[in-house]
Image (tube, rainbow, N blue to C red; front, side, top):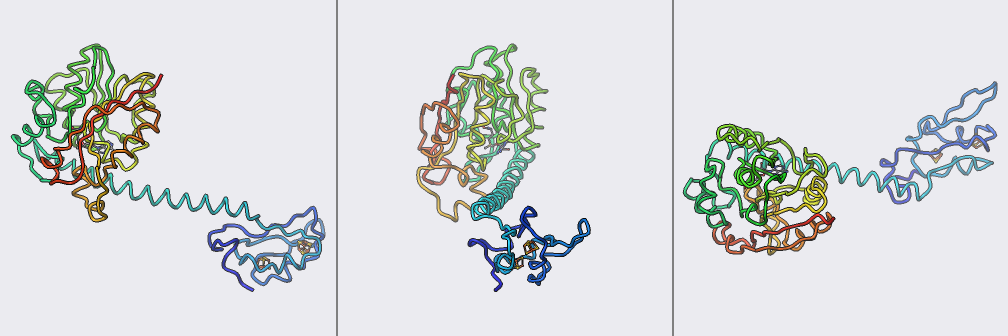
Length: 352
Ligand SMILES: C[S@@+](CC[C@H](N)C(=O)[O-])C[C@H]1O[C@@H](n2cnc3c(N)ncnc32)[C@H](O)[C@@H]1O
Ligand code: SF4
Ligand code: SF4
């Protein structure tokens, strides 16, 4: 009787069938005679005829006919354990590739949105209200913690896309190597560059080419020799392990589909005892499915955000010690149409 499943798994997913144990096989040919599906064939070896498995995938596992025909139990099928392991592996591969496709789609959408902001506007806004003029950006930047002095350092690098002021969250000292995750047009990188001085260095990483180009041209224009902008994904940092003193990030990690990967990459590149200062949007309540699938909300730093506790847990899981520094809940009314979220500012230390 034809069976379409084997140990509860569809046959089509199992890429193997019977094998013959030639230690036992007495070359009676009964298996090949019995099976009409072309699984077996006969061949000559040393002047003797014997059965061989020719098309294992033709086996409709598990009619058991050939096994019953075999007088010496020489036919071997994969065990339940092997089958389960294989199925688990196949299932994981399938899920991983589906996640990968989905994550690539998310990144493509985010890149397009920020590429447009970098190319078309001098100011943009991460908020969902869609505002984007210079004075709005200045207002936003003041409200999220930048001083007038900071706003005047490299104003054209301020696209109004942040949700905090990460370089103000902790001490950056002369000589520090700083990494800015999702550096955009480089506003925070330039502020960091001033603090670490000529003996220090700032690396800005962003996956949007237009942003990186914009940041590079601003750096050249203002003669920043201690800042370097690299095109790259913060889930796979183009940065050497253990080479960074301080990681900063401003309103970016919410956009990355695999946040645990971002945090473990940050952990990898930091030296032992290194710190990370993050300002990011986190949710205070689950979003609706409609909100989660809204690409405008995704690019506006909302739809990809995690619940606050999950966010902190992910950072701790990467090996950091986390200290919440402040929480701006008013940003919700100011910039996000009252959606239940906040801007979370935290310091995370790579334990020595
Ligand atoms: C809201 S903007 C913030 C930019 C900058 N931190 C600031 O405060 O002006 C988000 C930036 O993160 C970048 N980005 C988003 N996901 C990224 C990823 N997976 N890897 C690298 N950059 C990413 C975008 O290209 C964009 O420039
Ligand atoms: S189990 Fe059935 S279908 Fe599979 S090889 Fe044996 S006889 Fe052929
Ligand atoms: S039925 Fe068994 S002994 Fe006979 S040829 Fe097939 S495997 Fe060998």
